[in-house]
Length: 156
Ligand code: FES
Image (cartoon, rainbow, N blue to C red):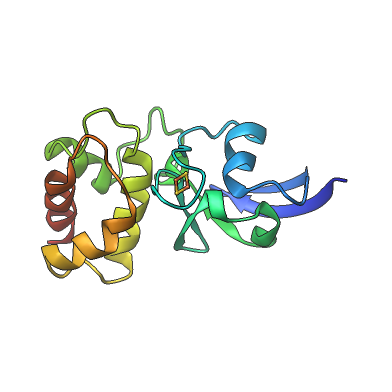
């Protein structure tokens, strides 16, 4: 049975009809075609699905879409204002490029959403603090050192 869901996604108020058991990740990717948010493990282990709900980072694969009723969801597509294809990069995106904070790029949207939250929540005072905060975002290519550099660069 479908249930109504009212949620602000990337600045647009949506009135949706969803299955109660659908995750926020599947809602974003499959119903709304917001495929910037990646599905790695679907079990809360990798961080590829990281988005912000009311400004706080969450694993979208562990979040039932219904629990976002009345909330504001931000995905990598909504990190900057306007069309993500043409809008200027967010400073964190630019820093990831500058510091080679990725290789294959699959984990990058989740890494960037966590990185933005890391600074916003005040956990970017030292590289160790950044490493601790970012420890839930796995990178198979091993770009960790460069990701920490990118975050410290934005923080300064
Ligand atoms: Fe959600 Fe891996 S897909 S944590």
